[in-house]
Structures are given as structure tokens and as C-alpha cells.
Image 1 (spheres, helix red, strand yellow):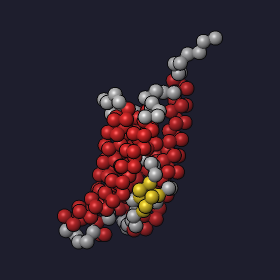
Image 2 (cartoon, rainbow, N blue to C red):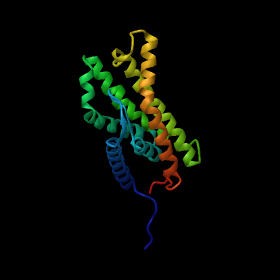
Image 3 (cartoon, helix red, strand yellow):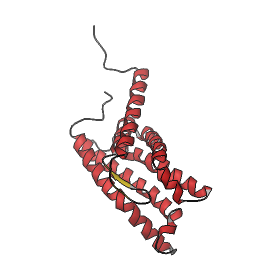
Length: 195
């Protein structure tokens, strides 16, 4: 009896949900392996962005943004101590969305080059760069809004410099580590296929 390689929509949805749950779990576990941590949040981890990038690459940008947003919600619980540094409802809202949900959701942009660039390592490298830069922008926004009191002065240029410097201290190494992981793993496994 011949078996078909074509998956039914139900099987595909089960596969996609299972992969999503596993990759979000991997992101969460890898985020618990810090290489170094900054005092007010921000950690360089061992490939914790990579599972969401792969999710987005395999199942599309919107699905990747969804998975990244869920991972961001989980990160809130791991970073609850960051809430002790801010006061006021608007600061809490900015912290929740800009530093967590939108920042981690933006990792879903990692799959945007899948159908634009045919070579998987290059497509993933471009996706990692875009996703990491977008995540950096969300952290930068929270830096100039709710973390501005930690800047050396209240002057706008000092606040902007502080936010860029602080967030680059962990996002630049995080970008480099994720790039290395993405290029290395893409040479081993083709992520374009559904199986």
C-alpha cells in the first residue's frame, strides 16, 4: 500500500502546533542559560532567539510573531524582578509590551526572507539580523521612556545614548551568537520542508 507524502490540513496543524510548543519551550529554557546579565534586564543567552527564528522560517512570519509573542509572555514571568524598578501603570504597560511581547514577537521577522533568498543560510542570516535589530528597537523605546531615569542626565541626547549603549551591550552579542547558530544549523538541516 502506497503512502502519500502530502499531509492533511489536520496533520499539518498538529505538526505546526507541536513544533511551536517545542520551539517556545526551547527558547524559554535557553533563555535560562545566561552568558552574562545586565543589572536592569537584558541578557546574552546561548541561542535563545534561534528557535523562534526557525519557527518563523518554517511556518511564516505571522506565525513566528505569534510564537515570539507567546515566548515574550513567558519571559515576563522570568523577569518579574524588572517590574520592581518601574512605577506607574504606563511604565508597566510599556515594559510588558515593548520589552517583552513586541520585542520577542519581532523575532518572528526571522522568516521574512525565506521566499526572497533561496540559499537557506543567507536567508536565515538576514532574518536573524532584521529580527534582532527590530527587537533592539523595542528595547530602545522602553529605554528612552521608562528607563530614562538611569541615564547620566535628563537631556534627550544623554537618554538616547544611554538606551542605545545599554541595549547594544546585550543585543549585539545576542545577534552574533544567533547568527552563528543559524548559519551552523542551516547547513545541517533544511528548514523549508514541512517534515
